[in-house]
Amino acid sequence: MIVLAIQPGKMPEQVELDGSLESMQAFVGGSIQAVYPFSDPVAIACNDEGKLMGLEHNRALRDEAGNVYDVLCGPFFICGLGEENFASLSEELIQKYTRLFQHPELFLRVGNQLMVVPF
Image (cartoon, rainbow, N blue to C red; front, side, top):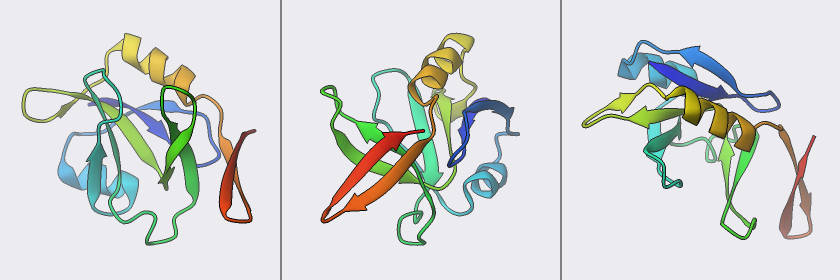
């Protein structure tokens, strides 16, 4: 299964996972949580307890106006959706999400707010 892997502080890269639950859990470092923030048939697979475990902030999720509404912590990958399982991403979707998550982000706490700055 071809996915787009996104590590904290690094550029996205295309990788191949064997599609087993074990390989996906090994990549994210624990139990898988799938989130579906996009209209495309894709999922973000991340560590279910990444925030609780204190994993490094990785990328911000933004609404249509560009406002941050959540932060993904630890490594995650973006995969396609099959009828019942995760699937490989198409080349078109790899390119789209590589552009979207192209720049690693720096997270700074200022008072009660979290500032997100590309670097």
